Length: 116
Image 1 (tube, rainbow, N blue to C red):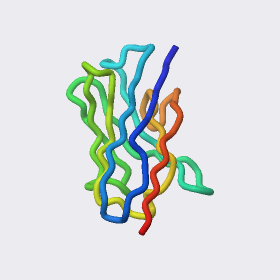
Image 2: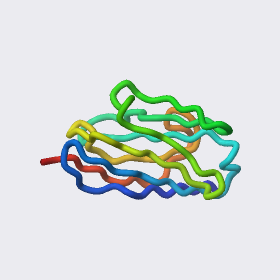
Image 3: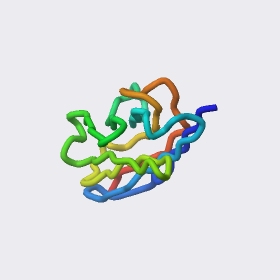
């Protein structure tokens, strides 16, 4: 059974940083592409970032490129989203997913609130 557990959300002021983690199990993580998506209050789910297996090539939504970094530790079956220079528009529930662009399986989300 595919299981994904995101953590690391919280409350942060604009300009601050957070690191989200997602622990995966139940599938071949090291050979799987993974992604992060988010959902702001009252809005649809938005793709944030993908990371490919192997050398870890990544892609980012325009809204986060240059501020967010996705990376993975295959030995820990974990991937991450380092979020820097957070803005109020980054507020939402963040979900990790197996597969690209939100994939086919998502875990429970973690709430990120950016506010002064």
